[in-house]
Length: 283
Image (cartoon, rainbow, N blue to C red):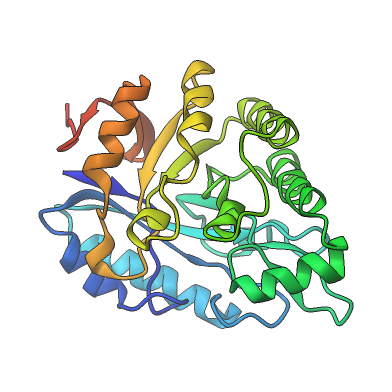
């Protein structure tokens, strides 16, 4: 059995209800976390609306009671946007965890946010109008924002750490072996180490065929392993069929790199569990 704490439902841009995700999870996961995209204060088609947060939490609480054989947890994927985001969610019933992600790299002159993982044409528009077509500046800003989030609004889990590389697939704008890029990643890893945040290993790029490697890339995972930074395995599932998509091969990669444990929220506590290519090894 596996765990997955990064899932999306019809409360945001997911394709299935919370109940459908629970049903799909039977026999695949023992620990299941819901992490719909949290509301933002600007126009965005794929986030929750603020008035949906209370019903979302209430429904998850109901599912917890109706499915005691599963460990179900309440989370949100919260965007870090300087001057816009913040711990607004504290006004609601306490969450079990948060996933902190950077999806936006500043705003265009008309106020539209440049999406890091949106359509490539829109990213190129932002690259031109915000960063004067200087890809190093854009990527550096992405990692700067990630480090700011880790310092000022540290989440429980860091979401898809290097997702900006999605804009590099088939459109080579930068090389991950370049010294400036590696330096930005290493500085970010230092910030992770100081924050106590868990890094997710996210398989969505793999099963969507938008990346040849998980987020983060294997060379980054090697550094995380060397620095004893805890990791977990998530699929960022927007459809129930993807709850454990690419988990066996990604687990095998993590074992090869040298990871011995995966972090799991179990019985209300973050716990390191042994694992192999078949799943989490329960104690």
